[in-house]
Structure formats: structure tokens, C-alpha cells
Image 1 (cartoon, one colour):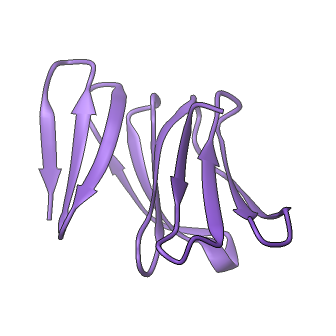
Image 2 (cartoon, helix red, strand yellow):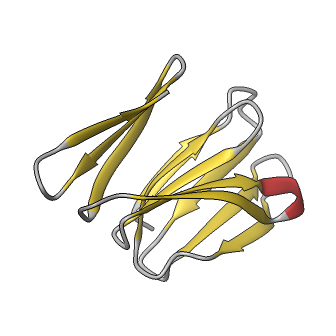
Length: 105
């Protein structure tokens, strides 16, 4: 595992890893809920937002998931490898290996 994010309710955890997957965990049942596949390199950041899961990868993509249905409904391609990601209010902030910070609203 490279990165973790916990849902606001404290019951769900998302993990991203070198094997290119994002896994959702039920912390109450201590079990895996879903395994999301679609990145081509390590997942370096995950965010559990109100209506979706967001994952960022060294493959230069940010993916937006309907985690319940294990479906990626949008992919944004960045010019450089992604090294970090965070969400502040309505803004998604992506840090890249090119020393750029990219902000999505």
C-alpha cells in the first residue's frame, strides 16, 4: 500500500498500491468491499468524496469512480507523473513530478 483515505463516516477505507489497484475496505466487517482496476502504474493518492472515489496514479491519470458499481466514469490525463493529490472544498489539487500543481474545480 502506498496511500490511504478514510470516509467521513469512519466505516470505509480506500487504499492505493503499487499493483495499480484501489481497494475499498469495510472497517466494521474487516473485509474488502471492492477492487478497482484501471490504472497502469502505482496508485499514489486516493480520496473518498461524498459521491465518488478519486484515485491518482504515476501513470499520469486521475480517475473518478462510482465505487459501489466498480465503474470509472471519468479519467483526466496530466502531462507529468502524479506524485500527490488532495481535495480542499470543491478543489482537487494534483502535485506532479514536473513540479507543477494542477487545480481542478
